[in-house]
Length: 243
Image (cartoon, rainbow, N blue to C red; front, side, top):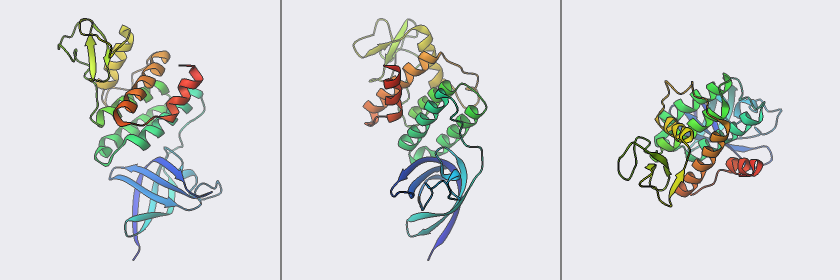
């Protein structure tokens, strides 16, 4: 017997499996849901707009057993703005991060962060800064946040010179070794901010563009070493910017 489920959420992954069909994963307040959507890749489909990456939509799903299929959907907010290079890059990173790193246990906090960050982008806040914050917060939600309060080796708070991603945090000048990535003071300040900020105070942030690119790349390397997958969107940045 078919059952019907109505749910709202953000599209975080679209995986085509036929010419016009796709599996869609959404992040909702209730958790992660995946469903099959017939014909949704065809731009004449009534469900095309609402099933695009990072759109916030309502979905009516039918199920037989453990699998869901899309009956109909409706776009609830404006589509993400890809009008500039930085916005397009930022949204591709946010999409890939969300689709790969968010787990069922993380959904409640991740849902709040994703919605807030997308609203910030639509409001015209700095795209790369918002993306860098989101990147750090997802890492933190997954339990791999960096200690940015003191040196992870000696506990000292003075003369911090870099980050040891392998061991998880700030390192002072005296304790720096081959695992320490040395940063200038502005970059260290940015690292501290992106891991320390919260949903109530992040929107005033605007970081240097080069620092954003550098830290996005370094965090992607950290993510690869920790969780074992590469972000294709970041690889694109490295190629284009010749990092």
